[in-house]
Length: 185
Image 1 (tube, one colour):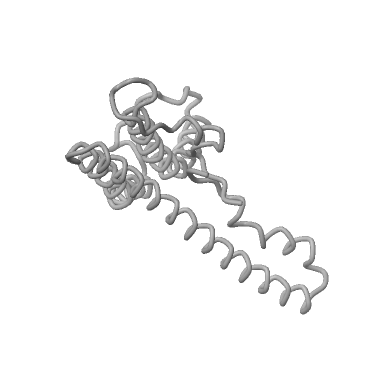
Image 2 (image 1 turned 90 degrees about the vertical axis):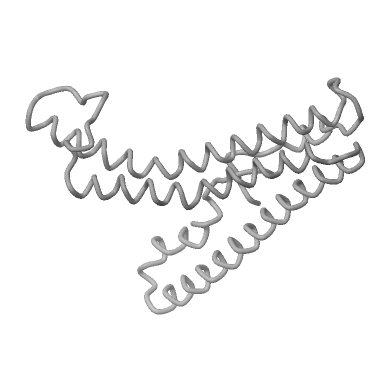
């Protein structure tokens, strides 16, 4: 079962509406929810990318604090960081651009296509297209996680056969990828 940080719950599926007009039961309410989902998915991915760097930065600042007996500053000048952390910041910025720009573009294009649709029926089909595309993405992600999880399980079995003392360490590794959270269910 795929666990995502950002998702529609099964209960929320019943609240998705496709009626014409602009009320609470209209397609526009579903479009608003879809836009919020897309924005939240983008923000969650951005937070994931920043988390690892923030942990390194906090460790660095705590080590600096031990030496100087000062509080950890709330604002940090880039030039005050170690060369290693400066490089990490630059790599994070590049990675965020590479990974987040396509998500932002996808969201904007989806909204543009929905708004450009000439009829209500075409707007419904367009929304359905993007929902179906997301379902396919999640199914592919689940399949990949299952394949890698199975491969890790087979590798772990081989390790267990070669050294029975390692059983405690390898038994949980097979579920490593399945435990990682992400978006939509």
